[in-house]
Image 1 (cartoon, helix red, strand yellow):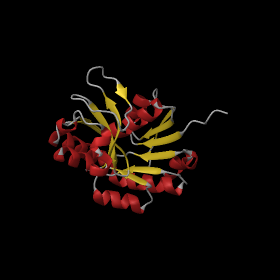
Image 2 (tube, rainbow, N blue to C red; image 1 turned 90 degrees about the horizontal axis):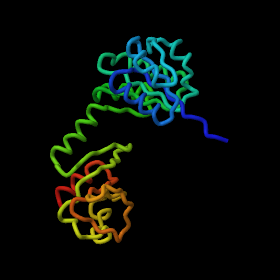
Image 3 (cartoon, one colour; image 1 turned 120 degrees about the vertical axis):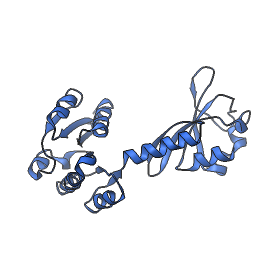
Image 4 (cartoon, rainbow, N blue to C red; image 1 turned 45 degrees about the vertical axis):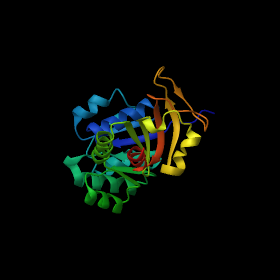
Amino acid sequence: MPRPKQQAIVIGLGQFGTAVARTLAERGVEVLAIDSAEDRVQAISTQVAEAMCFDATDHEAVQRTSPDLRDVCVCAIGDEGREASIICTALLRQAGAKRVIARANDDVHARILNLVGAHQIVNPERAFGERFASQIVHEGVKGEMLLGEGVLLSEVETPEAFVSHSLGELRLPNRFGVTVVAIRKHESGAVVLPDANTTLESGDAIVLVARDGAVAQMMEKS
């Protein structure tokens, strides 16, 4: 029996909310996208399962979307609607939503969203700024992605000190708390899955999983 599609509600179709809704839909999630602006709803209507235009602080309107039947509800309302985002998050919880992810603009906003019941709080601007700053400070960092709960997936250029050494010799998990999960070969661009005997070569890019800050520490000390 085929696994039923995951279902999500995304409320607030600014740049962040639109990107979340579109990407979820591309990955096979059945997305209901909501905004109070008709032009934003129209713009995404062909890319998601359903798009609706209404005020997300309207209790009855939110109830009609059946948040309790969805796998996740994302309140992505931005800077222009801090009060609306708080009310919307509270209404989703009151409607029985199993998982509510809410966008915060600052620490005070995040604390209030937590108080009204958000299961997870994200600040995309801050997260991007921190990741981008890491790339500026450490030129070898090619990109980073937050996996959740302070764990990052990072792609970095192989430090010169690591070249011609095997992963077993380098003992990166013990020394820095980072784990190499893949290597992008410089010559071919092929991605290989390494083991302890894999030797790093100049120009290779290594893909790491680590706690926030561990990769920066590794780059500074290598």
